[in-house]
Length: 390
Ligand code: SF4
Image 1 (cartoon, protein in one colour):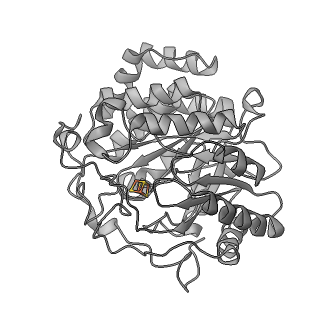
Image 2 (image 1 turned 90 degrees about the horizontal axis):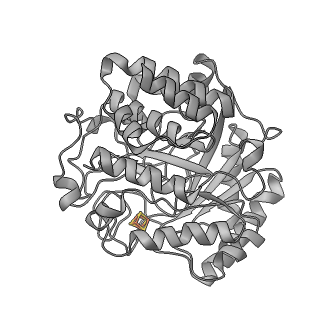
């Protein structure tokens, strides 16, 4: 297919595809799916070989958020039955992080619900990082604490944060349909503050919220314009008790097309397969490793992932290898700032847009099967007495 040959050539040269080319990837048929995966896989292997970087999430503060992001199980007044707790003690967070590192994670993502941290919260996170690094000197730390105000990015950098994550989530045009308590521009500003402080910017999207193909391309191109180092691709987990609980719009094939499009637009950035992979890709998860070069190990913030052992087996069985600490994740031309990180100060593991325009927008394809049986609230790991899933 000429389209795919063009996109591979561009990806190998780090050249930006056109919007029309990106839209054409999303419009390919299921008959062409393996060709699309193979083409994007060439680009992935050019910049990341067969390495898979494992990130491990530690939810420092769960639920009780005053914001109203419609996709989020931790939103204001949500009735999702998730674990709710306030800040973990540094030693408890450190214990959770150590379990992830022992399971093969190279990066630990410290996440807290909320609009953004107070200066006291930054002190708390700094103490937590100190405790984590006492045990695991080499671990990369990504923080995801919401919107940052003046000076906070620099303080986090000085505390040892390598990457900061704040997702744009969806297009600017539909942002107000999923969240009313902050704006798309607020998030862009936080990504810029991260970069200005010299940290690596991680920012991604949530697919499956009822958005159009154009919306997906808009947000993926906006992230390229921001030149983020890593792009987590979340697939909406339609949590019961959120406004988007009924939004089951994705098929495994569409999820793969979305990942391929992201890879073509971000050839040399970390593309992270994030929340929702188990419930939307299901048995096609291994194919996604040809597109993404990073995944989260084990559980998400508020929902359970597949067993950590199954993640590791999947990587080996598909012919990939877990990336070690001795290897730099990003290609040489991208190194220097921070890393290429995890989720954002929000939930990579759960979501849906409000019952507004985004929810009413026609899905680009027919709806996927509702697999509520695959959505499980996290009941183990950080914030509980049970061991984490690693
Ligand atoms: S995404 Fe983040 S800011 Fe929005 S409701 Fe969830 S925890 Fe709060």
